[in-house]
Image (cartoon, rainbow, N blue to C red; front, top):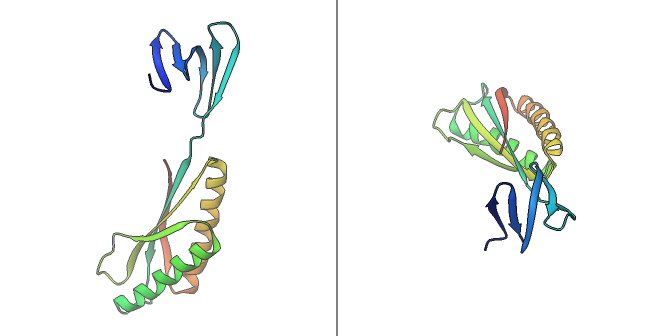
Length: 141
């Protein structure tokens, strides 16, 4: 039998114990076993935050200029924050770029604050490099 299996009408077998589940949230599951003892099970549910930045690089005259701006932005974000950064949808258009920033944590609040800080820093870095963040949005998975 798997570690957690539904037995019907709210009863669950978990780790060899029969439980009556009364509350179930994203992170904490609690209930009563067949003998009436309270059972609490905390599960670790990592959150993934995905920030997408769309850039317009007016100062770029060639793909080399575009790559210089995007590489600078990616390297500075990686070194300043504990995030993964990549260029999404690489296109031959020299004045546009899409950058993806991803981080994983157990806390959605932490990720929300981190992505806001990354977005502010990316806007500042892009402005200093002759680019502009035209759009940005965050998704949580």
